[in-house]
Image 1 (tube, one colour):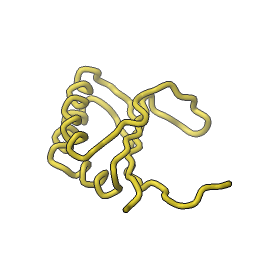
Image 2 (cartoon, one colour):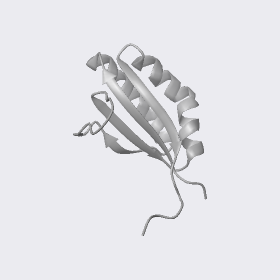
Image 3 (cartoon, one colour):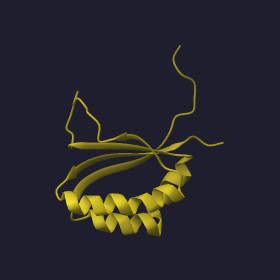
Image 4 (tube, one colour):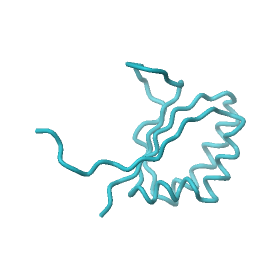
Length: 102
Protein backbone atom coordinates (compact mmCIF):
# COMPACT_ATOMS: atom_id res chain seq x y z
CA UNK A 1 0.00 0.00 0.00
CA UNK A 2 1.41 3.40 -0.94
CA UNK A 3 1.61 6.39 1.36
CA UNK A 4 -1.22 8.89 1.33
CA UNK A 5 -1.00 11.94 -0.92
CA UNK A 6 -1.55 15.55 0.03
CA UNK A 7 -2.26 18.89 -1.54
CA UNK A 8 -0.77 21.79 0.37
CA UNK A 9 -2.08 25.11 -0.85
CA UNK A 10 -1.51 28.71 0.12
CA UNK A 11 -4.21 30.97 -1.29
CA UNK A 12 -4.96 34.68 -1.52
CA UNK A 13 -8.58 35.21 -2.50
CA UNK A 14 -9.17 38.33 -4.59
CA UNK A 15 -12.82 37.73 -5.52
CA UNK A 16 -14.94 35.99 -2.86
CA UNK A 17 -17.84 35.29 -5.24
CA UNK A 18 -15.62 33.75 -7.88
CA UNK A 19 -13.79 31.71 -5.26
CA UNK A 20 -17.09 30.34 -4.01
CA UNK A 21 -17.88 29.13 -7.54
CA UNK A 22 -14.49 27.38 -7.58
CA UNK A 23 -15.14 25.85 -4.16
CA UNK A 24 -18.48 24.44 -5.27
CA UNK A 25 -17.01 23.06 -8.51
CA UNK A 26 -13.96 21.46 -6.89
CA UNK A 27 -16.22 19.35 -4.67
CA UNK A 28 -16.97 17.12 -7.68
CA UNK A 29 -13.31 16.18 -8.20
CA UNK A 30 -12.62 15.90 -4.49
CA UNK A 31 -15.50 13.45 -3.98
CA UNK A 32 -14.40 11.37 -6.98
CA UNK A 33 -10.79 11.06 -5.73
CA UNK A 34 -11.48 10.55 -2.01
CA UNK A 35 -10.22 13.92 -0.76
CA UNK A 36 -10.41 14.79 2.92
CA UNK A 37 -9.78 18.32 4.22
CA UNK A 38 -7.31 18.38 7.12
CA UNK A 39 -6.84 22.17 7.12
CA UNK A 40 -9.26 24.59 5.54
CA UNK A 41 -8.42 28.26 6.14
CA UNK A 42 -8.09 27.96 9.90
CA UNK A 43 -6.34 30.27 12.31
CA UNK A 44 -2.55 30.25 11.86
CA UNK A 45 0.62 31.86 13.13
CA UNK A 46 3.30 32.76 10.62
CA UNK A 47 6.45 31.45 12.32
CA UNK A 48 8.88 31.98 9.40
CA UNK A 49 8.91 33.13 5.79
CA UNK A 50 5.85 34.44 3.97
CA UNK A 51 2.24 33.35 3.77
CA UNK A 52 -1.03 34.01 2.03
CA UNK A 53 -4.20 34.52 4.05
CA UNK A 54 -5.76 31.09 3.39
CA UNK A 55 -4.03 27.73 3.88
CA UNK A 56 -5.43 24.35 2.88
CA UNK A 57 -4.20 20.78 3.37
CA UNK A 58 -6.14 18.01 1.62
CA UNK A 59 -5.45 14.30 2.14
CA UNK A 60 -5.98 11.66 -0.57
CA UNK A 61 -5.88 7.86 -0.23
CA UNK A 62 -2.59 7.81 -2.20
CA UNK A 63 -0.13 10.11 -3.92
CA UNK A 64 -1.34 8.75 -7.26
CA UNK A 65 -4.94 9.75 -6.42
CA UNK A 66 -3.77 13.24 -5.44
CA UNK A 67 -1.99 13.70 -8.78
CA UNK A 68 -4.88 12.19 -10.76
CA UNK A 69 -7.35 14.52 -9.05
CA UNK A 70 -5.33 17.59 -10.03
CA UNK A 71 -5.11 16.52 -13.67
CA UNK A 72 -8.75 15.38 -13.90
CA UNK A 73 -11.22 17.16 -16.17
CA UNK A 74 -13.38 17.87 -13.13
CA UNK A 75 -10.62 19.70 -11.25
CA UNK A 76 -9.32 21.51 -14.33
CA UNK A 77 -12.83 22.92 -14.80
CA UNK A 78 -12.87 24.10 -11.16
CA UNK A 79 -9.37 25.56 -11.54
CA UNK A 80 -10.53 27.62 -14.53
CA UNK A 81 -13.08 29.27 -12.21
CA UNK A 82 -10.38 30.09 -9.66
CA UNK A 83 -7.90 31.73 -12.03
CA UNK A 84 -9.48 35.19 -11.79
CA UNK A 85 -10.59 34.82 -8.16
CA UNK A 86 -7.40 33.89 -6.29
CA UNK A 87 -3.64 33.50 -6.36
CA UNK A 88 -2.57 30.00 -5.34
CA UNK A 89 0.65 28.15 -4.57
CA UNK A 90 -0.04 24.40 -4.61
CA UNK A 91 2.19 21.40 -4.10
CA UNK A 92 1.20 17.75 -4.37
CA UNK A 93 3.30 15.62 -2.07
CA UNK A 94 3.54 12.01 -0.93
CA UNK A 95 3.09 11.36 2.76
CA UNK A 96 5.82 9.81 4.87
CA UNK A 97 5.20 6.21 5.82
CA UNK A 98 8.47 5.37 7.57
CA UNK A 99 9.77 5.22 11.14
CA UNK A 100 9.12 8.06 13.56
CA UNK A 101 11.41 9.43 16.29
CA UNK A 102 11.07 7.70 19.64
